[in-house]
Image (spheres, rainbow, N blue to C red):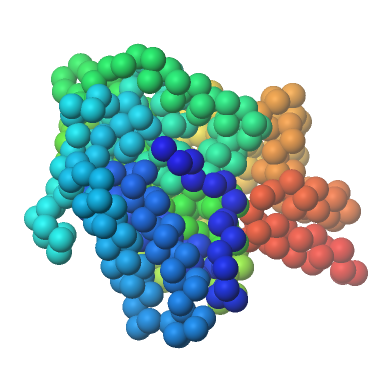
Length: 425
């Protein structure tokens, strides 16, 4: 299988790079869902992108660029299949793991009607029992989620080189295991459910706040994560953490329209126009989390969903029940060894008890190597220093955070905060 390049592919022609870069994952998702052979589909989409870069500057943009790319990619894929074989090894789709006698026929008819969406099956397949949960999640994010190695490394808070080695070892481990891929059932399904849920959570998180994208939001990723989580919830409707995960996504995504301004700039939560929030999604999310919390053991996704619900149900930012949020973060910290949880808890503590308490909690987090050089620690410290009246300290923290983030939108926001405070009062 040909690896997807981590950097945007430099295509010929004067066509703006962002147009093809934005369309590429959408087109790949459609073609993969129809034909299910990831490697072949990726090659076909790359050929379609090259054709677009060559033809569109000369002939003009088609009326529907996305449909044009899909049509060309499908045609290239069909030509390749006819020239080689009507069937492809599933191993190309799942990183060279399935024996040749278990090939998958191409999807339904050429119009794509009545075809079966097996993306969720693929997620379970990549979460192979021969792998550790961390390796399975990383591999699935790369092969199925379409995230780059850099994006995955950021999600795991490890260096990119470390993540590249982990993904490579994961492929080798599965190949050496030589086990058949199949949709698990019973205890086998339950054993993989946590890894699959975490993959969907990370895909959604990358879409909600893109780590290396020019814009803050990647709607393609967050929407696909919600779609797949709905499918997972349909598969295991009584699993409380899957229900909590779906609720969390809906409650968080409900704020999407208010999170950026006219120029794509970040609008912080306390300044968002709540009239733009999706009330239907909020109602569904609140119903899901209210339904699952009383009848099961509490898990991290359920608690995060409850926190999101408290934010979403507050009529104004000033009416947010920060005491309840602080209590929920305390519960979440006991359930999850995640330094970002402790970071968010420090913010909640500052909102309840004052910025000095929040800053004291931040000091305790500086010894955690997962956060020591993370931009969020500096960004939060800058926010709390500003609340405490230390303008110079806040400016320094905002600028340091801007230097450390890989998100263009976050960098611009942080630099704007620093510039605002650097001006004479």
